[in-house]
Amino acid sequence: MLKDALREGPVWSLGTMSGTSLDGVDAAMVLTDGAQIFAFGETAYRAYSDEERDVLRAAMGRWEGLGEASAVVESAHAELLGQITGAAVVGFHGQTTAHDPAGRGTCQIGDGRMLAHMLDLPVVWDFRSGDVEMGGQGAPLAPFFHHAAMRYVGETEPAAVLNLGGVGNISYVNPAIEVPSDPGACLAFDTGPANAPLNDLMRDRTGAGFDADGALAARGAPDGAVLDRMAADGYFAKMPPKSLDRDEFAWLGAAVAELSDADAAATLTAAAAASVVRGLEHLPKRPARLLVTGGGRLNPVMMEMIRAGSRLEVAPVEDVGLNGDMLEAQAFAYLAVRVSRGWPTSCPGTTGVRAAVGGGVVSEPGDAVALVSGASG
Ligand SMILES: Nc1ncnc2c1ncn2[C@@H]1O[C@H](COP(=O)(O)OP(=O)(O)OP(=O)(O)O)[C@@H](O)[C@H]1O
Ligand SMILES: CC(=O)N[C@H]1[C@@H]2OC[C@@H](O2)[C@@H](O)[C@@H]1O[C@H](C)C(=O)O
Image 1 (cartoon, rainbow, N blue to C red):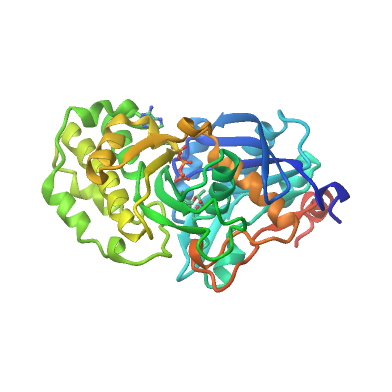
Image 2 (cartoon, rainbow, N blue to C red):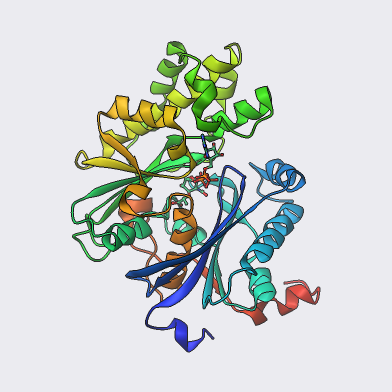
């Protein structure tokens, strides 16, 4: 049974995200009643070691045989979350290894029952499966939180929040509509590849994890033929809802293989920016500006290419007082409280699910007893 404190009123919820960039785990506290955000609290980050990252990288694209990778995710989360006290509940996203909503579904590793046992706290996890079972994409799930965050910072006009992680996603939210699942409150979709192809290129060519500050791309020129091929990809013309697996645009890597390091980096940076610009076609109205979260906001070359292509003001979410390093972890803190109250976490406008649905499974510390004692189940 969920503790009474979780049933009503604001609680401190501790959210986590292990994103498609495979850099590490973010954790963040949010004071919320599942509808309104009252405050943002402590944050923490734990990088994966090179060995852990190798295990996770080997798990990408896989649906089974994920025991070792799951254990890496669980222990990294337990170590990080153990540093933060005062949470009533944990929102545990886990690590996506594969995503194919029209086919095999969506796969996030890390067992929430184990984490509940390790932390002695209720843990909400497996956020995406319920949405997929109801005909949704299972992603993106941050939009309801983006809606609440825009209300928290006092926005009153429709706002566009763009996340530039490994994959890009955009939420177009109307803060004047109170309930996020009401028609017109939230429209969202994945825009396309963001940092993932560029990170993979950097790792292969230079050994660096990413193109810090866009320095390499700044020295090169985008290849028009690759960008034309990108523009012809059917994903961009497709109406939302739509979502992507991390490696769905892996052909981009082969397409830039013959280019110099700088030109290849410039091309992949431009491809990420072009995806965003194409995505704007699907918004109900041109937003006043793009508020950008995720690591890509720290890449001035990518930001400038989006600005030039969209002719919009493009600003980091810090401009409205939010923390762009932690927005996804905060999202899962917020969603965890919604799940524990039985409220929806997605709707037709965000994932294409048939009706507003509350994904997520709640596990209590005692639920892991069978797992921990070695019994099967
Ligand atoms: N200073 C910087 N310069 C350029 N790029 C950066 C910088 N800092 C971060 N990035 C990029 O942002 C990425 C991390 O972004 P983020 O943490 O938002 O991704 P994620 O949460 O793993 O992905 P997703 O949102 O797809 O799950 C890095 O891998 C890198 O590509
Ligand atoms: C299947 C999956 O894990 N998707 C991630 C990924 O990373 C960005 C984009 O692709 C988005 O769809 C989603 O994450 C964010 C947190 C979301 O669900 O809103």
